[in-house]
Image 1 (cartoon, rainbow, N blue to C red):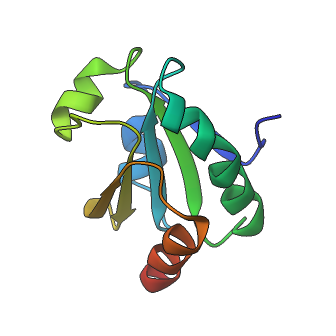
Image 2: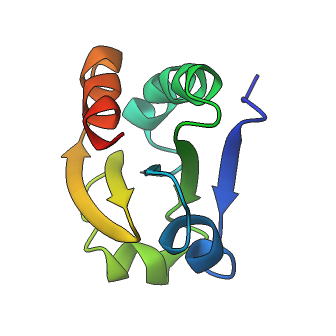
Length: 109
């Protein structure tokens, strides 16, 4: 079951949820047909639940938000972008280990 702490991002709410966030944001660019994305999903949910109040965790379905994917030059998924103060500061591509994601987020706090 998906975490209630993961924000679903659309082109309409991207700026308010990510660019104007007061905490660092991990944005998972994914698609339902992507096997590695589905493997990573429970890890993303765990991080969202563990980091409530410290960071925001968000997901962008690239099929539904193609303009956002293009804006950030997402060519391969899953793509994980880390935002701080409204700017992308790091990007990881592929099914990444939970420890790697947590370490990157902790580095932004």
